[in-house]
Image (cartoon, rainbow, N blue to C red; front, side, top):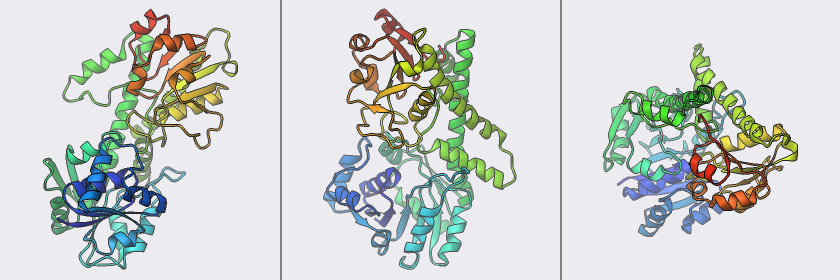
Amino acid sequence: MADIAVIGAGYVGLTTGTCLAHLGHNVTIADIDEIKVQKLNEGEVTIFEPGLSGLLTQGIENGNLKFVVGATSASRNAAFHFLCLPTPPNPDGSTNMEYFSSAIEEIKDILPPNSVIVNKSTLPVGTASQLKKQIQRTDVEIVSNPEFLSEGNAVQDFLQPSRIVIGAESQKAASSVAALFKDIDTTTQITGTESSELIKHTANAFLAMKLTFINEIATLCELVGANVLDVAEGIGYDPRIGSTYLRPGPGWGGSCFPKDSSSLLQTANKAGFDFELLEKAITLNQKHLQRTAQKVVNALPQGKEPENSKIAALGLTFKAGTDDLRSSPSLTVIEHLFNLNGRVSAYDPMVNLPIENMSKLEITSTAYEAANNADALVILTEWQEFADLNFERIREAMRHPIVVDARNLLNPQDLELLGFQYIGLGQ
């Protein structure tokens, strides 16, 4: 078993390190946040991710998982160094590499001979080559091993992945990293670092474009009297298309799709390629988010202006199964509602604190509280809890029983029997 340092204890780093420990490796996870490190050493998981808490506790009890402050503390005696650091977008959409450059500067002189640095985060094409130049050590290899973790399903995605991609410039480095995952039964693809880096960006951009397409079809369905759920099911049976990522929603967002699509667009621009298809998908998604907000305003009772109405919003995280609010489409739609002079009261089972830069948003402790005296209710995140609500109670709480279901989560007939005006997406 290998001695592994994981730099960064966010969604990717914490899941990666904990699962590597579960595979039997000796893992030290480093973070700059002392309070977070203390909590993790006490067995307290600092993110919401199903299944992670049990594995973390198991690793600590087995003695092969620990947490430290600072990258050097973790890397000093490790053979593999997984960099799982934030890659936020710059204002122009390119990737901010500050965290990676800082980490390399911090550890490059203390790395043991023959160390392998593994880039786990989503990075622009050419990053491995740039870091190799920065580190200036011939005895250290840089490998790209992009993560394909879906928040809310990250543990299973790590331990039962559809594939493992390893980009390296030497077969020795690639084989050494592949050996870390030998107990995982899946396809392992070995490529050069540039291809590996591009694979992750391409995958996320493709899925984003697929969501854009089905959202556009949903709008068309509303205009021609078709049902997007039937259309999506029908095309999903085609194995060339597949049934995943064909569920329309308020628009796509989250921690990966927006920044990775923008980063890929910037990569294309720098290479002198006008990536019109991807650029259009990004623009259309922004329009769809605005369209969703306008749909809510249009649903208000006749004569009711947004400024004199209360809108209940159910769901703030970018999808169900996570507590992540980064680039959440729910928040973007709510921002558009504010721009249309709407008043919004919101509930999400994973959010109980005020949200930064959204002081006008009222956060409630239950869906029923959010719905109290509301003139319309919009479902923005597909939490099962919302499908299981007592809608008779919701109807009694609301001033006007109007539901805009931007996730097509509910059964329209059931709500209409209860006296609701139901407005779905693409129906």
